[in-house]
Image (cartoon, rainbow, N blue to C red):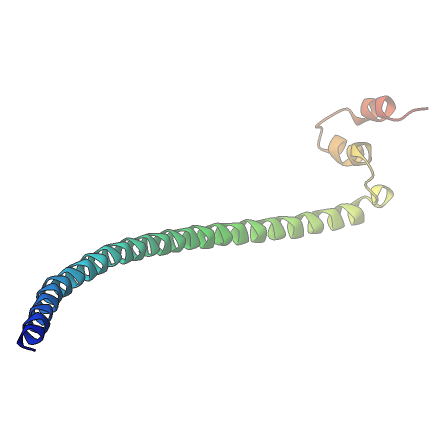
Length: 128
């Protein structure tokens, strides 16, 4: 019976030695894994912050482009309103040419300023 207790004691001591070696080994593996995951998370966070910065920069560029486009559209709108006023004046001043269908219809107006010989333009651009 003493031999059984001695064998059991040796097995308990062997298990204890194995446990004393294996637990620190497991803790070391876990620490290594945690360090790797931490590094990976830091890299992912850095990538995310870089992407967020580039998105913010792109949003600023798009806002500037939209503002520029709005300015250009307002310039076009004001120019078109000035052109509409001009053509209304033209229609009142020259009732025979109130409908502009080609450059030839502008000839009385252009020739009154001495800019071109529109009679030649009319003859060459209209058949018959």
